[in-house]
Length: 80
Image (cartoon, rainbow, N blue to C red; front, side, top):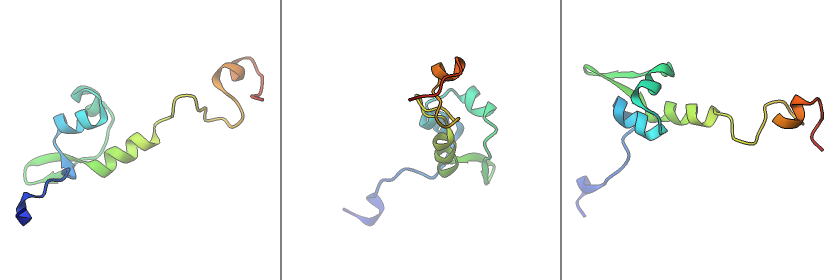
């Protein structure tokens, strides 16, 4: 294999690719107010920023208030 035949995921992504990477539409991606990097005349999303955003999302089944799940929290009961 020649040195230049190595394939890898690019770090900077155009809007359609960045949206697909996150699994959202391009219009949804634009509403997220994520910073873009400028390379020449292109505005590109940094894959690391997209990963940080995805990591910051709430995980299904986990509630941000410790000791309470969403159902019991609505009725004022603590999780056992």
